[in-house]
Amino acid sequence: MISQTLRRWALFAALLSMLPMGATSADDATSEVAIAADAAVHLALKVADDVEATSSDSEESKVLAVSQAVVREATDYSFRRWLRTRVWDEEDEARYGMTFDDDWETKAAANPKLPLVVLVHGYNSNPLKNAAVMEPVRKAGYPCATFAYPNDWEITESAARLSQRLKEIAAEHPNQRLAIVTHSMGGLVARACLENAELDPGNVDRLVMIAPPTHGTMLAHVAVATDVWEHWLGRSEGGGWTRWRDSVIDGLGEAADDMVPGSPFLTELNARPRNPKVRYAIFLGTSAKVTDGEVKWMRTALQETGGRCPGFRDCTGRVDNLLADMEELVEGKGDGVVALKRGRLDGVDDVVILPFGHLNCTGVCDCEAVEQLQSELLARLK
Image 1 (cartoon, one colour):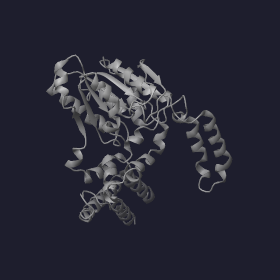
Image 2 (cartoon, rainbow, N blue to C red):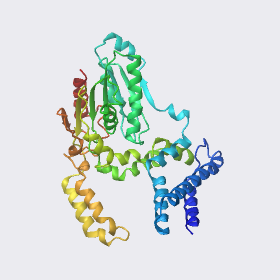
Image 3 (tube, rainbow, N blue to C red):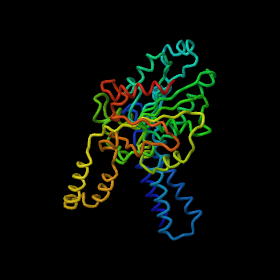
Image 4 (tube, rainbow, N blue to C red):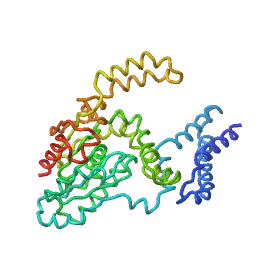
């Protein structure tokens, strides 16, 4: 009977939810399992009831409809958000938001014409990793602040958080104008805020984007590797529970999905007009480390040997297609993460091309390219 099949799907949904959600330690996790499983069972049974009540199709079609609904609930963004709410607490909220320099109001009062410069970091990053790019800005007397956000959430959610903070500044300091400086994905977060009439705070005059993946990045296809590095291989502190929890809090791949070229998010964002009240500038780098010849060699080797490798044969064509278009990694065509052709933005003519790499461009000024970037940045804040 179909009811038995639906019960099995309810059990499947419950098993998906057998995770230590809502606990603050591994010991507390057990008490949450029953709650999560019960919620999942009710969800799956509701789906089953809806299908049986509204469908006159065959038993097989009903089973398919239920299975699709359950799997969709487990894989789409709503499930990821639900999972995050089970572990989120007030301490996590304290990690994110706007942080002002101690002297920002003093500097703003001393020269009211200068904008408050807000730094927005990128994917798998934080303000500290980009701190060096703000040093010459501070030395020039600009009031400064940084905005931190969970860097692997849906970009629209991060944009809404940015909007809230900028609107708070507008309410508390109505005469203070702002300039936003972004690195990498931070440019998408800022644009998703400023180019949305409901989110635009109305107090931003300038947007300077460093290495923005305007049309995405091919590396987003393999972004799971960066998450593994960030929370499991690239850190030494914290046990398994802490690292798993931090992975959930920071996001479960939503931002990477948004940055895949041609994603629904990018298609919608890039179809919008530019904000006419904002002056845009883009800095793009060309210091990737792979040559065209090396890419050609990799593709040839893949074609000649990939088909003979067990387990790799079926995906050889897809990998070859990725390599053929991965200008992000090619010297002179990308910075190692963002390709020149995917960094440009319609309606923005102020585009500066410099020989910097994606990860060093906001770091310590130890080369001519970064020095020039900082100089050009200051010129656009005036």
